[in-house]
Amino acid sequence: MVIRAPELGTAVARIGAISKHPSLVALRPSIAICSATRRRRYSAGAAVLEPPTDAPSSSAPPSSINGGGRQVVEGPNWKFLNTNEVGICTSMISKPTRSVLKQLKKKGYEAYLVGGCVRDLIMQKTPKDFDIITTAELWQVKKAFRDCQIIGRRFPICHVHINRSIIEVSSFNTHVERSKNKMRDFKKLPNCNEQDIIRWRNCLSRDFTINGLMLNPFSNKVYDYLGGMDDLRKGKVRTIIPARSSFQEDCARILRAIRIAARLGFSFSRETAYSVKDLASSILRLDKQRILMEMNYMLAYGSAEASLRLLWKFGLLELLLPIQAAYFVSHGFKRKDKRTNMLLGLFSNLDRLLAPDQPCHRSLWIALFAFHEALVRQPRDPLVVAAFTLALYNGGNMAEAFDIVRKISHPHDHTFPELSGNPVALDSDKDLKIELRELAISVESSLSSMTDEYFVSRAMSMYPQAPSSNLVFIPLPAYQEVCRIFECIMDKERENNFLCKSGKGINYYNLSHGSLSEVRYVFARVVFDTVYPPNLENNDQETVHED
Image (cartoon, rainbow, N blue to C red; front, top):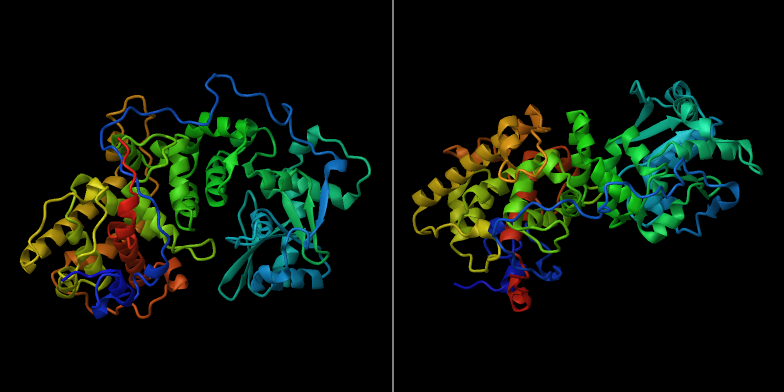
């Protein structure tokens, strides 16, 4: 029985697009509108590790764009824009954020939106979150709201809880204390009032020019003291102070630079690119919890593929994820490669389902890494992979999974060597069960390797020119969360009290909080659409072969 595209649209089921079986409702609801992507074949041959790109070849850093000292944007170059000019309207600000702003205003304090949320609003993107800064002291903020806590010792802020949202509120006074030493190089600028100085000084304490924008939602003004609007137009990520000084001051800014560039599709200024590459190893000094947080921001909010490409391009992947970096090298993947591979394909399909305000739980992207590594170690028949994802989604109901798999005739992606395993006889449930359990064991083994410092340190040992890293930032609770995803395949019986996910859509609240059924559903959907791309039959005629 051959199942073609018209039938796939009606069989949009748990894995979607390949059969009219009732178990397939929802995993590929959008097959009819999936955009075609051109796939390229790539060499599986080993490659010599290239140096990171986009940096000057000389050992000396480029001359500072900011003139060698801290960047000072003179008063005449300051820009004050009306929100109408930049396309911002009140409805673009979330209701909980508006509520906090109004309450602060009602109490007699000035309140502004600041940082990345202003940048995203100007770019007509949905902000990941909204940050507020106010003239109130933190204790005054806490007093103004029923559910509010002051958190942090070094950089204290308030968390205001409204419904299911947490709004971060900081104080101008806290920032003034933090920036006293930084202000030694600056003199008061002529023709500006005290409020401008306070706002300007606060913007100077931030990381990148495009994050140094401030919005007053009551006067409908956007304040640009540092040239952020110009860099938004140019599509550039540029540090406010000289890049080297900025990254030495806070090496986490290197990871934030990658995350911002990936999400916005921006490039780095020349000086920033050089310093990202030159100071890459400094990120190993960061606390592991901080690294996990930054990696989650990169991989769980809809820009994972672009983040992985940039981490690889600038020599950070081999420090953060040596196992995945070894995969890139062994498959001849160049630093500026535009081609794809299965790992990037998985995260590209994940990105299509996520957004800054619709993220996934960390267990999902960690599970994808472990699953892919299992296929790298032992390639599998694509039908085994399909059965695995179906059984996973069904809570271990292998009989139903096998029934669906036997109806699949849609072509799989032949460009991925991870899918070149020995064909499996589909007429034997016993053999299929063995294959699925072996794959589950392999996934668990890969996960263990990703959390083992010795194994991680040996991942790039075949490439002596690569930097050495034994970084393991996946904590034990995250390891256990991922193990639970695959438990139903390991057990001999279907999970007790299993409740199959209902509905075709994704419940993003459940997904972000690690609901097992929701995580399994999205995992299965991502893997299935990577192995069996819905538009593959059309793309086969356009495939570009690269030797």
